[in-house]
Image 1 (cartoon, one colour):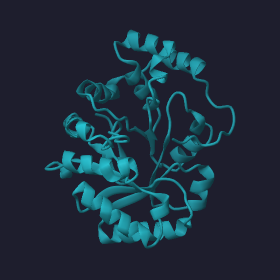
Image 2 (cartoon, helix red, strand yellow; image 1 turned 90 degrees about the horizontal axis):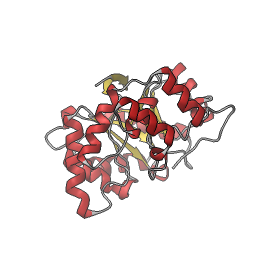
Image 3 (cartoon, helix red, strand yellow; image 1 turned 135 degrees about the vertical axis):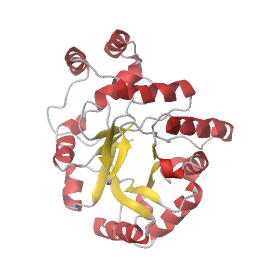
Image 4 (cartoon, one colour; image 1 turned 30 degrees about the vertical axis):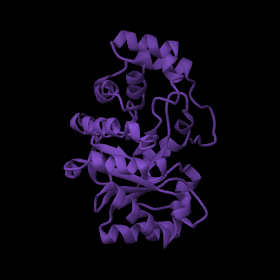
Length: 273
């Protein structure tokens, strides 16, 4: 699978998301199996957060990476209300226990909250010095937030980005690309299936012998320094996600998608879910 450099490490351009995992005990073994299959297929970047099922997703991930930790690039996120000088180390320790590991490769601030960014960065840097995390980054930050952060050690910005949500293309994505800061796209195939029912997307998928979700992922990955983190539990969907990295869209495909999903013509409020 194609890779790019994130936090000084070569990672796949398609990883695995875990939002909504860990919520139902009846799905636990299937979620663990899906993540392990994804690792086997090369999607070795796994993204999670203490917010997801209030730690339940981290527990699923911890089981999935048992015996495979050295193969995995692990990303987790801290709640804003825990992002203080005292709160971050405690939150990190809880995440480490659930993940059953002694370090997190990349630790993100989930979104901005009440604590000054300088205080959060100080706590992140202390964790890095202690070897509890490899690098740190942010999520749901707009250009003004990143400019205020003004930190060359911020490794990534994870944001909502898909065909239906293109607002970051006006200023945020170009800013990150100029700074050589990889963007992690969450919800890359939308939510609830609405995007994947689009007629244009279906037509392009048929031409390529692919699925609408694979086209949506390939569309994202046409951009430099973008990582997609789709979530999948069904083995078939996991395999299709991995194969999407090999799909290249033609100029006519991209033009058709631009007509259906219009590029932003001005600054838009950063979309979040």
